[in-house]
Length: 503
Image 1 (cartoon, rainbow, N blue to C red):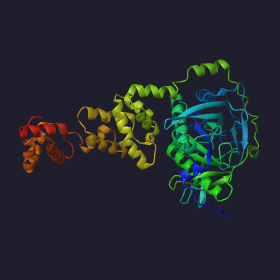
Image 2: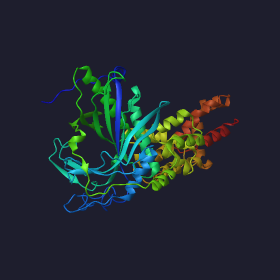
Image 3: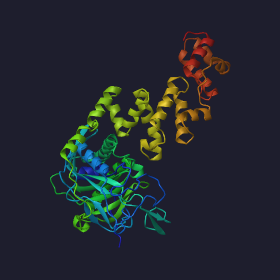
Image 4: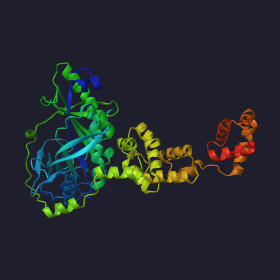
């Protein structure tokens, strides 16, 4: 019989009554050319089951060979997170049955991860939060199940299921935090900031494309509540495979309210996995959460231990890119952004996009304006992250160059972005197809100016009488007649000249 959960507790009430403890596990697909233990391609989007071989399908007699580039990427990730790098580690078999697991076990690392005991820092609303890192270990991804015939795309209600093994064996790094305490009411924002920080860090390392919408980076969110900070940890739930920053924040917030409702009702929280539903903003039960012993870990007999040479590790450490904690203040100073402006940039995940737009020749203020207003609005309407929009920094730089050249105004520029988002081509192609260039030729504007003057004699009289601000109505009339494609500043000049007043 299915248990009916009690009502949610309003979020503010939940965090006032309980202390929140989180744990976040982030899975990162590495940008290697081949899989973790075989030579199959890792390219995204291929026809199902065309990138497989006996090794990644787990066929009898096949043997794995470790991908050296994946090991290097794992070490660089660990070093960037302040972790120690193991002098000796090995793989293990994690045994469980799932249709998309062709070998019926996952080759992973258990008690001997390659990187361990690190920490990183995120900032939320002017406060710094240290995120302790338990480990970063290597493993392989599973395949992908496709449930056909149901309304939700999940197995419940589906007519049948298909499995695509292209993803099976793709190199993964799993980054696991220690319990994250002391976040209080900011827990959802801290979770989002941490995953965003990891995404930026991994992108700067060049180890992954971190495309959350494609599953290259996804987060498992563990949440538990306790009565007070000094009390023992509560029972946790684990919301699996959350694949957007917005969903990370929403899922943590929802689980806090759900846990509080269960505890307030005198019931016990079940330790289980949960599924996040983006459309409804809720989680639903998955399976009861196994303990480590349920996976029957044992050392992988077909792979030798990994023993990174210390000289190699030091070489990789010396070549790490500028860390985000250094890069962000450098960019802020160079761009001249206030703390509040920079905070807004970070909150919407626009830092890299703005940096690339500036590198393409756009002024920082203009780059910030487009990404944080028009494009952020579009992304919010579509429920996607900014970098998932089909508008690139190069597109933004092109549009702004047309504005700077006097060929577009902001209103027309917004129409250009609309066209690019609709798949009508590059900004130049959209301008051409829609006929969006400004009318700046005086001869072409004269007729519209004369018409506005003739139609508004009372306004003309006010302007001649010294009320120059009244000319705004005439400018508006000309802009309407030219469908917004006139240079407003030049229109005003022409109007005042024809009226016979200084401008």
